[in-house]
Amino acid sequence: MINAVLRASRKAAGMTLDQVSKSFEKRGVQIRPNTVAQWENGRRQPGINEFLILCELYDIKDILHSFTGENSIFSGLNDEGIREVWRYVDYLMKQPFFTETNIEPLPRSRAYCGCTTWRFP
Image (cartoon, rainbow, N blue to C red; front, side, top):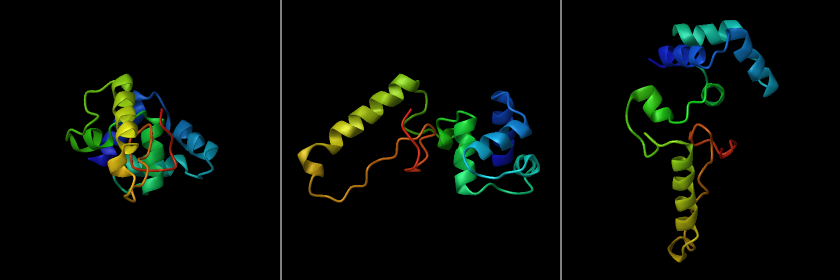
């Protein structure tokens, strides 16, 4: 199923296999167009870093829903609604009941993926 979602998402984004490969190169990752085709045909699976880059390239904002059909807290929200959720999370994390715990900052990714190296939209 991942392969079908990746293929459909690339086509919806209007990207060719070559364009995807070049987008990876701009991020310092060498991926050949043939490799992307293998991911889309189900012959290979992308690693987690490659998968997250694909989600960003294809503007997949809710990974859980896009790949499993399950709803997440972001399902059905537009970009402004998602920003409001993050603002509320920030507010809660600044409250006194969070100050004595060892809570990691929540990631801010376009794909809401759990990767702390990505940025909030």
